[in-house]
Image (cartoon, rainbow, N blue to C red):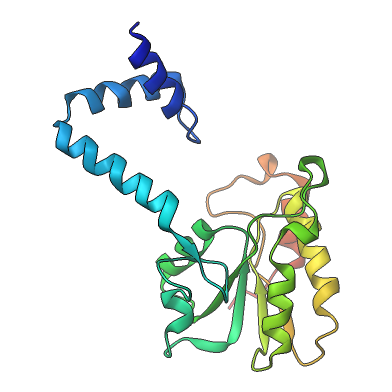
Length: 198
């Protein structure tokens, strides 16, 4: 294999979810593309990586100091949805069901990976709540062990804000899941979050 091809495959396979075979297919596809299209793509990726900013208010990706969601006067400023990553904001926005603001932590607490509460944007969240106006904080983070640790930590930190309701998104068994294959933690959450059938 060409050294140049090996290098391209090696770099592409560093992307999440891209194995060696997929990276090879992508590299071969790039080779068949017009050179100007590849140049546009690499320029766009380079600009994104070097010029993207994080919103000073919510830590979401932004082209400016404040992201479009935080600067939107139509959003409900009394509710903040706390998520792990920027991709989670996109997932929730795609539902078109949530009209409040967001707060991106930048990860979850993970002692095994050396990520402590001080590595996350928790203090920034507390500053936003302390400024007033916020009546509800919705915690929408993963149900992993690290996510549960982060949820527990946030619940304890946010107790000091007596006028703020702290909620968590419902957790439980997904549509189409068979009970015998669901782990105990998920079943526990499903039982705790049960609701009356109407």
